[in-house]
Length: 139
Length: 139
DNA sequence: TGACTTTTCGCAAATCGTTCTCATTATCAT
DNA sequence: ATGATAATGAGAACGATTTGCGAAAAGTCA
Image (cartoon, rainbow over all chains, first blue to last red; front, side, top):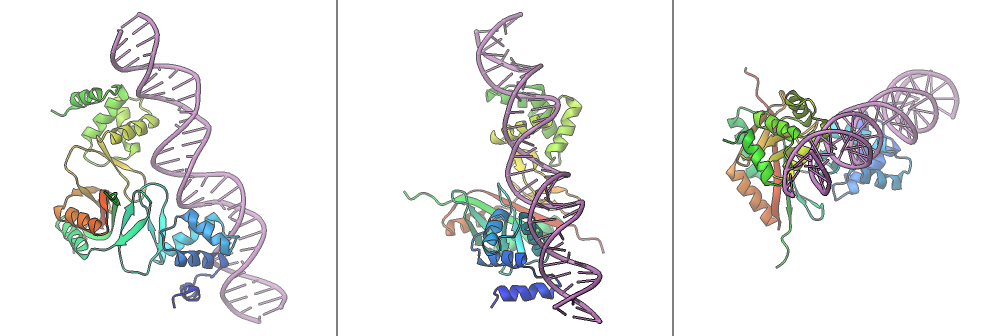
């Protein structure tokens, strides 16, 4: 149901112009099961519409991020990696050997974070929790 | 006891040449109670030794990081911020209004992280936990 | 559909923090 | 002191991202 046509409708609802390039980028994000970088998104979008440019990818991602449609992750090393928002909140575990990104969520940790911040006199606006590890070699 | 002279001794022990610039940078780190950026470190080090250059600051920080003497934090926005290692492990809470960095530690969260990773079949190599918040305005 | 206004686009140049090159200088064991 | 070698300063180079600008599309209204 939340197909490309739906995404298009959502864009219009926000008074944003629907362009071929934007649809191509959104399509890429919808299809992605990994957490692609801007460069990956550009390459994949070009398959659908060769006219998409780097600048447009960045501009569109920034715009979608502000709109809350995509999440921008700045993991360790290289550039940012993106994912479509929409699901439930989650944190990430990055496989140091493969670069694979695994999503997880812990209500307990979230609660503890809020407690800690409260004790220090703060309200959390957002947080970043990333675990970097490797799968132990079979022995 | 862990004064500049001590730091110098440590450097020599690792077979590293002790230069004026390196001592100046280490001195800055020792005096810093905040989490300065490379640029701040450069400016402060220049007070003690005007000959220190940007390149040397980065080279020295990279070297000290590898040696485990300093910790490099890549918080949201701008560039990396550094701190002398040596204390106990801790995570950070960044004040979104002032940029101030507050350190905290939670054994419970650490434990939960390890559990989660284990459940997913991973050993954590390191992690990054940052809380971004603001002090609620008095009302 | 055509004429018009506004947004978006592609391209190339500009940023920004950081890293590298390389000729010169400083450190340290002798 | 002297040489072998490592470290330095200045500036160019880098990689990811952003921006300025004239051209090309999208949305509007008749």
